[in-house]
Length: 279
Image (cartoon, rainbow, N blue to C red):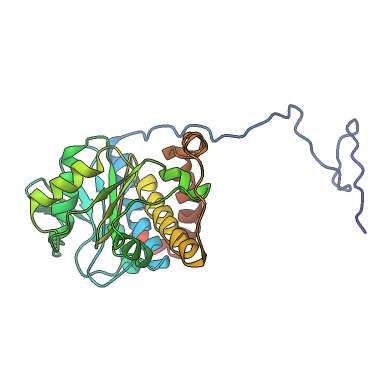
C-alpha cells in the first residue's frame, strides 16, 4: 500500500516536520550546461592527463587489456604536435598520471623513460597530424572488436545505441601485419577522416574524438555495437533501422557532449575507488 505525502505550499518547513522543499521556480531541463574552458593550459593539460589515465583503467575493467597491445593518446594543449600515451608493458589497470609518456612528432619521448609502443606512434602520430580536430584516439585488441573486424565489413545500424555510429565509422581493409610503418599509419588516418571510429580489418577497432572522454566512451560503445551485432546475427537475421530514422537518431545522440558525460559517469566512481591513478 502506498502512502500519500501531504505538501503544504504555504507553510514553511520546520525542523520537526518532513515537508518537502519545492523549487519556487521549477523548470524543464533536459540538457547539460556547457562545460566552461579550463582556466589555463596547465589546467587543461592536467585534465587530459587525468582522463587519459582513467580511460586506461576503465578499459581494463571492460576487458580491453590484451598483453602489450593497446594505446590511447591525448594531444598536448600547448605542444600540439606532441601527445601523451601509455608506456609499453604497464597494465592498463595500473596506469597513473605520472606513468604517461609525452612523445613528439619524430617518435622521441620527451617526458618519461619507459619504452614506447612502436605501433602506438605509427598509428596515433599520423592521426593527430592528419586531423588537428582530433584530441584523443584509442585502439586496443578488444575481443568483440577483433571478432567483428574479421568479417571485413562495416556495422549495420541495428539499435538506438548503434545510431551513434551511423555512417560515422570507416573500414580499413588493408591489413599488412603489425602497424610499425608510418605510411600505414597515414593510410589509417586518411580512412578515418572526421569519423568517430574505424574498423581495422583482421586487427580490431579504433576511435577518435575532440576530447579524451569522447574518444574513450566511443571506443567502449563501438565495441558494444560489435558485440551486439555478433549476438544478433548468431540468433537470426537482424532487421536494421531505416536510413532516415538512423540518420535522425544519429543527430540526436551522436554528439561528443553525450559521450563526455557518459564517460564522466564512470570516471567519478573510478577515482573514488582508485584515487592513486591521479598520482
